Length: 143
Image (cartoon, rainbow, N blue to C red; front, side):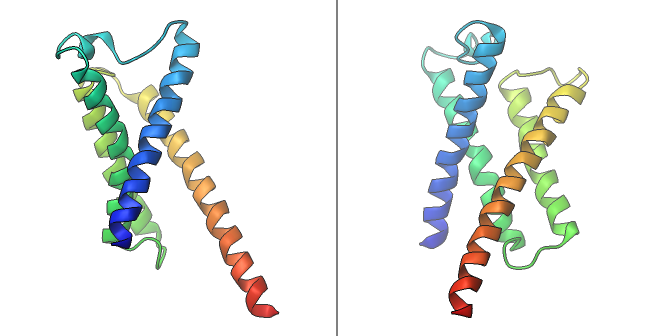
């Protein structure tokens, strides 16, 4: 039950982060960005937005599932982190090709570079959160 709750929370986190990235893209591009026109025009009205939101949610679920499978939160190892990263970047590339963020035949250096930066930032946020929690527990135990 705890895993289902975590998956739901992470789904919402993925949707939220996707929405934030979309908002930043809208500011950068100078128009209201609701998906790449090539993808949106290929599906029924409204369907494209729904698919996009589900895929954004997947960006929250996939890392949580891989963490559960690899048990990253119980014992950290560099190998597990690399597998976790490879699973997520594979999902990113699949989602990008499906949503037509980029073409499979084009160079993916910039999108992958941006993905890596976002992955590192989110990793730092999780690290700081976990460190704070551990420090609070240690402080309570030392009293």
